[in-house]
Image (cartoon, rainbow over all chains, first blue to last red; front, side, top):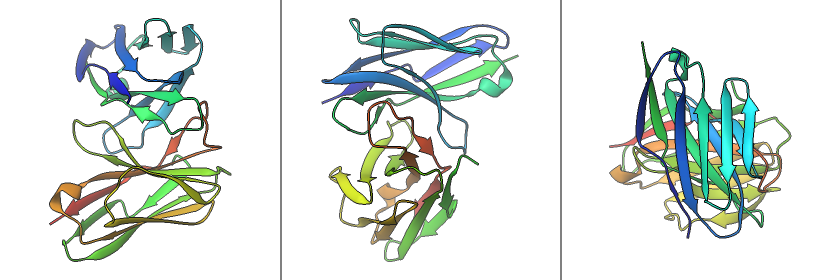
Length: 110
Length: 114
């Protein structure tokens, strides 16, 4: 089977940097995605890593280490609007659907 | 709006009722998904349709019945539900069913079974 582990809650101060970790166990690993979901809203795609290393998109960056079965989402210059749940999701080879983690609820405080 | 529209946004139904959830996308995507989101649990995959054919059914009780009449529309028919079925039901679509295609989600239907 597959499993993903991420912290359930993280609190950080406005303007700071926060890292949300995700470890996974799966066969046929292909890539790691991150999604953001505000309360009452739709999960929205943030980033995708298939290769080791860091992908940067504005204030958000995502990192993957395939050898460690580990990835993280890095949010810089935190803003209040970044308060949301963040989900990591594993893609596997063979046209199989994404498998999601339980999500990390990020609270940004003043 | 994400491009994936779900109706209704909220639904309260009795255990003996029959209702349907609707999902619509005009993004030109060929794969559509139903997920169940419960508090403190991972998103649970329920059904996958690729090119209008059901390709995966994740051991979902028969009281949930999906229908995909065309590549733009997906339904989830509900009957004789249980209170534990109360959850947020999310529809998603992707260009193709493949490892590196991002999903576009709708805002979900918040279902309460009384």
